[in-house]
Structures are given as structure tokens and as C-alpha cells.
Image (cartoon, rainbow, N blue to C red; front, side, top):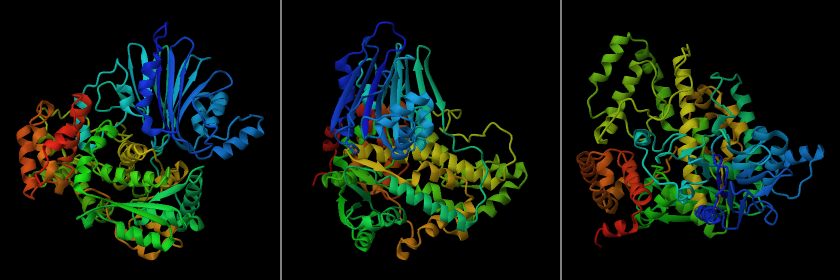
Length: 637
């Protein structure tokens, strides 16, 4: 696992890559790779590549950049889990290897297949290859989007990096707000690829690669889970057996490491499944959990401890106080780069810090299981009410269009859902994650209805005759795997594991497992109205019944309580800043904060994205201190 950065002056005949600039970009990523560093500048100074290394596999022999036989130069962030099988196959073809590191497999595959090397890789990765023979830079991101890659171009230069802060370290990159992206950020708690909240800075989408040569940058998708939009045909028993086989293999593959591997353990079904599938290796493995003092509804440490005792793991836990959370706001904003407006980022940091303090550099995490196997309560809610929804969809257009007007303004979520039914296509089940349109209209100074919400179904412009429920199911999965998972959930765990020099691996998102489960019908995932019915069947022999039957408890943070104290004071001062005044209606935000402090506020996803935006703007756009602001707004003890 590493942090990578690079410069390619594709539009310039005379190179001017500065070693000092490249080093500055690279060292902003020190936390992603404290174990080593590498640098390459081409003889003509048109190409510069830098890397910070977190040593996980072949500790002595995996230095980067790594070079091919024809001068190819690679920088790589991630892990290739099918590396052993790929290596054996290539050795049978006479390919020689000089290291035991999975990094080398990418070089050898690129020598043979060029950009189609990505078709052979199973893993989490973001990498770039300078190809001097073709005078081009090739860069790619893994299929599900576990690892990030950002890029920008200016004056004939392509800059890329694992994190935006490395791009901002280049003197030609000036941070500025992409104002048109604010509505989609408030809708989804994050921007969707290719945009970020920075003007002119982009993120490579999951399953995409890019090529840069003298014609500029071209992006192409190499993996498409979304098509065809058809369900597969397996019996429930066959599907469960296949899931078990694929999940067993995925967990086994993700144990590949020359350093200790631990598990982030909540005590819920997903993380317990990972421990259970370790079998005899579970005894003594390090597990880590986190909770909030004085907020038992968000504290799963007791359940995690029970699971740890059952499997006899080496268990560790940490509690987070309000003061500790607020003291971390500077670190939160620094490591996010652009707002990831999910408060789960805070407990993720503390639990990954706990792993780091215990010298565990690799952890398994349960991300992706709820999206893949339909584990969220909202899935079941829609499933249970589908007959009611279907009746509305069958009403004449005129009647459907009148229904939203009967909903009071205090219920904007229901009104917006009925408006979607009125046009015959409700939004994905989890959209919006943040604010509904009425709330965005209420707080944004200028609200353009034509601005995108950041997501559209892949067949939005096609005439289709899909069954209404099948359409909603596929729209929901496209939203989850095209935006919510790669750009929010996976980025939050990437940022805050790597902030602590810890590598997080997510077995539920093995591409082969995803490809199989993605097209299984929702009726199997929610069999008999039971969330994750298929997963529960698949692992019923290794996970204790009291875990399988335990109701789902969300992973969150007590933002509403914080807003009634120091965080509220902080936000009150932020409301008066030019950054807020430029984009938001201050009176609407004051009213919302006042209601929250009185215990009558909207859910935390209303104000938390604005708090994140304001802090981000202060630090990354204005270059001002957050620490001073936090200290000046503390409630006197």
C-alpha cells in the first residue's frame, strides 16, 4: 500500500519537472507510506514519478518505482490478490521475476498486454505506468473503487496523485471551489466522479483507466457491472453455496501479507463473518472496536467483545469523547481533502489509530456487505411497501401528479418520493443520502434546478420496458456501486486507515463475488422479508445464531448532540464567514442550528455537510487555521 504522485508534461517539448516540486508532492503523502520512498525523473525531464511505501508484501524487495524491460516505469498503490496465480502462469510462459512483490506483476502484465493488463488484475489498486516507447502515461483504478486516483491538467501538464493535497502542492494548482458541484455534494454527501469540489481537479472513476499522450487525456471504462440489467437464475440454495465459496476464497486471498492482519470488529453480522471465516486463525488475531461515551445507541463494544470472546481473538477497544472528536476536526478536514460528509469518518479514524498503536498494519473490514446483500432497513421498508408503490404507479398520470400537493411541507422526503412516482421512476432507495431538494433550495443562495444531483441511471436516455421493481432494484444498485460505495464509503475507510498508515481490505467487494451477487434477484437477498437472507444462509454454520438474529445497528456519530454544544458554537461562527455567505443563506442556517440546539432539528445529515463544507473551505481554499477556530468556540468548563 502506498501513496503515489506524478507529473507528465505531455504538451511541452522541453521538460521542466522540478525534483523539489515532485518531492513536495510526494511528501504530502508520507502518512500513506512511512516505510520507504522512491523518485523517478526522465532524462528529458518531461516525466516525474514519486511514491511513498507502506511495506506489506516482500518487505525487502518491493521498492518503487519499479522498472520494466523496455524502460516502463511503475508507481502503484494497492494489493493484487491473484498475484500468486498470475505469477505462476507467467513463469510457465518463461517470464522471469526479480522480486516476490505483487507490484512486479503489473509491470510484467503491462509488458505483455499494454492497457489491457487491468483485465487480469483482481485487487484494489491505483497505479500509473510511464511508457517511453509509446511516449504515454497509462493510469488505472480498480473495479469497485477501493483506491483513489485524482488528476488535473494545466498548461500541457498532467498531474496525478493518491490524494488531492499532493496536487495542491504543485505551484501551478490554485484551489478554487467548483460551485456547480455543491448541490450534488449536499445530495450525496460527496461529489460523484469525475468531479470534485475543486475546480479543475478530477477523480478517476471505479473500473476506469486513462491514457495521456501528446493528444491529451482520454478516460475509458474497462469494467462495467451495470450491464446487462438482467437478473440471474439460481435457486436460493445454489446461490448461498456459491456465495460461501466465493467469500471463503476472498477472505483467504486478503490474508496475503508479510505483516500481521487484524479485523475491525463491530459485533454485527458483517465483521463477525470475517472473523468466523478465519476459522482456526481467528484465535489470537487482533480485533478492534470503537464506541462513544454517553451514547449507548452508537456503542457496539459490548457486542464486539462478546464475539471476540467467542472466537478468542486478541481484542482491543477505544472510546471517543466529544472533546476528542472536536479536537480531531483539523485532522478530519486535512485527511478528507474534499468533504466526505459522513460523520463515520471520525470513529473510523480512532479505530484505525488503535490498530496502528498495536502495530497492526493490515485490517479486514466489512464494507460493501449491506449494499451487496441488501442489509439496510430502508431496503426492507421499500420491499414491504412495494404493493402500495405499485398501485400509485398504475394511477393515471394526472392523479399521480396531484398526490405530492397533499403532503405537508414538514414531510419533504415523502413529497419528493411522490414526485418521483409521478414521473414513473423513483430515485434509488438511498438517494438522497443528504438533503432532499426542498432543503437544498432552502439553504443555497442560488439554486439552479437544472444542476445535476450527481447521478443518473445508465439507461436514463433509453426507452425501456423494465418491470418497475426490477428497474428500482437495478437503479439502486447502480447508485450504490457507482457513487455511494466508491466515492463515500470506500473513500472514508481509505482516508482514515491510510491517515494512520494502516491498510484496510474489504473481502465483501471481491469483484468475482460482486459480479455474482449483483444480479441475484432482490427476492433472494430479502427472502421472506429478511435483510441479508442470502448471506445469513451462506455463513449460518460458522457465525453464532445470536449474531445472525441480532437487529442491525448503524455505525454513526452523535453529531446532533455535538451541535448542541461546542460544535454548534463553532458552526455559529462559521455561518458568519464569507465562505458561507457566498453559497448559503445564512438566515436559513441560523434557524436550522437553533432548532437543532432546541432538540427540534432535522437529522444530522442536514447540517453536518454544511459544517464540513465550511471547515474545508476555511482550510483548503482560504488557507486559514481550524485549530484556532475550534479553541475559540469551546464552551467554558
